[in-house]
Length: 342
Image 1 (cartoon, rainbow, N blue to C red):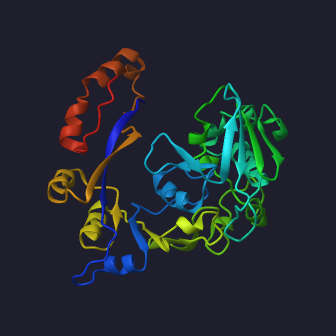
Image 2: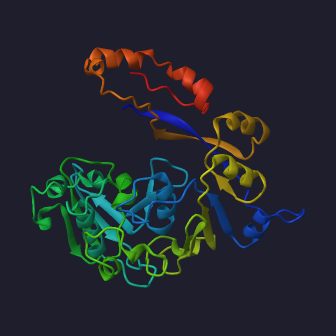
Image 3: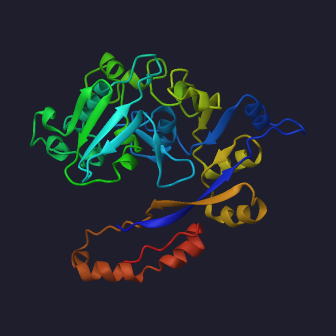
């Protein structure tokens, strides 16, 4: 598989109230509720189990890693659950200083114990997290995950005190703050997870609306299957004063045409997907609302390679060379993607 830069179409409705006849979106705007089309029902909301974009859209509003993305500098990092951080000279040891006022949405303090618990949980072989490899940068993290090392205390994460976390890496990683923005590096509430099961139990009720606690700017309020997921302001968030929205409502709309119609009928503020045949139409007719943003991903075609002839690598290479990637972009996907050449 090769990576390609994909231009992802996004439609953004101005978050302003209209003076004309009030539409559904005007009412939500007045209430400071953001309505987002989210493609489909999420598979879950446990940041250490999920693997999809649909889930991450919601999880990033509920949880926060040590660092967060800078709003205008794609290479920058801002304080999140950590107020500050520093590394040694060769970037193999990092020290993160947690927010002293950091709390979970139930008011319990966030400490290094939550991070140690989260990292042991996602790396534990019995938990079988698909994205456990995201933490293989940590010294002995991969060995612990593969069962070659049984004692988690030998993995390179240490609590100096309740608010000082040290991370020892297997090699120099100057970009570690960027990694901690990914949801696999988020803390999970030790007290809540264990109240609903053991560390390695999956899909327990700790992520249900009535029991879930989180450390991000919002907390889970409602999850109605195939209807909506709504998150509301978290009053215990360490930087709550900068949060201007009262709520975000995610709509699981499986049909992309339905989602587009709802956007154009003023029923939602944001949709991040368009049918290929609508991309050029929206680019021309709605230039103020339409945006295309670079997304690092890869679309690929999977073939049944069980036939004897496909065991020859030259046949597989010839098949790859025969695919006109630019033609697929121009006539099928129509999103302006870059061809991933073999």
